[in-house]
Amino acid sequence: MKIIVSKNHDESSLKVALIMSEIINSSKNPVIGLATGGTVVNVYQELVNLYNERKLSFKNTKTINLDEYIGIAPTHEQSYRYFMNSNLFDKIDIDINNTFVPIGNNSDTDKALADFQYQLDNNDRDFQLLGIGPNGHIAFNEPDKYLHANAHMISIAATTIEANARFFASKDEVPKKAFTQGMGDILKAKSIALLATGENKANVIKSLIFGDDVSTDNPSTFLKMHADTTIFIDENLANIIGYK
Ligand code: PGA
Image 1 (cartoon, rainbow, N blue to C red):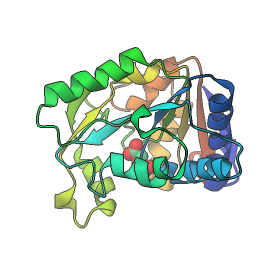
Image 2 (image 1 turned 90 degrees about the vertical axis):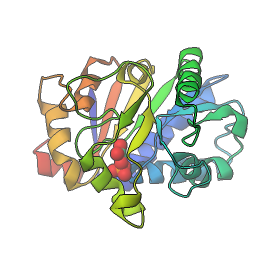
Image 3 (image 1 turned 90 degrees about the horizontal axis):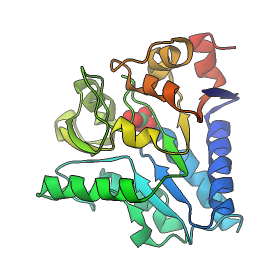
C-alpha cells in the first residue's frame, strides 16, 4: 500500500483525477470503478475540468459504481445514480449506456443483484476509486462478523445512517438497505485509489495505515491484500494520526 500526503484535500483530489485521466487516455476501452460521497466530489470536478480543457475524453470509457441505496428511484436527488449524473456524467462526453449504477427501486432484488454481478464479472476494472466510511466501510461493506465477496444486499450500519443523514432532510429518510459490490469484487480492480479527509476518518485510516491486522471490524483493512492500492490523505489527517 502506498500513502500519498497532499497539502490539502483539493490537491489530493487533483492527483487522483490526474491518475484516472492517465488511465483513461492510455487505454483503448477503459473500465473505471466509481464511488459516491462528499469526499470524491472534487475528483469529479477536476475530471470535468480536464474534459473542458480537451485533455480528456470519456468516449470509450465504461464505468461501474460501487453501490446504490435500495428503495429510492434513480431520479431521487440522493440516489447514487443522480449523484453520478449531476457531478460527472451530464458534464462529459461519456455514453450514458456505458455507465452502470445498480437500480435502487428495482422490486426484483435478485435480478438487480444478478445484473450488478454480471457487469462486474464481464468488465475487468482498470481502476477503482474509493472513499471510506467513518466506521471503515468500503462501498457498503459494513463492519460485521463476515464480509461478502460478491454483490449483495446489506443493511446499512446505524453509524453510516448517522453519517449520511447530512444529505437528507432527516435521519429517518436515509434508506436502510443498499446494493453493494462485495470486497472480492473491489479487490479485483487492477489499481485502487482511496481518498480520505476529515477528523471522523482518523481512527479507521490510522488502523489501515499503521496496523497489520486484516479485520472485518474495519473492512478497509482488506485493501492491504491488494497489490496496487494507494491511500491519498491530506496534511491535516496525516497530522491527526501522526503519519510523517
Ligand atoms: P463521504 O462517504 O465521502 O461522504 O464521507 C464516504 C463513504 O461513506 O464511503
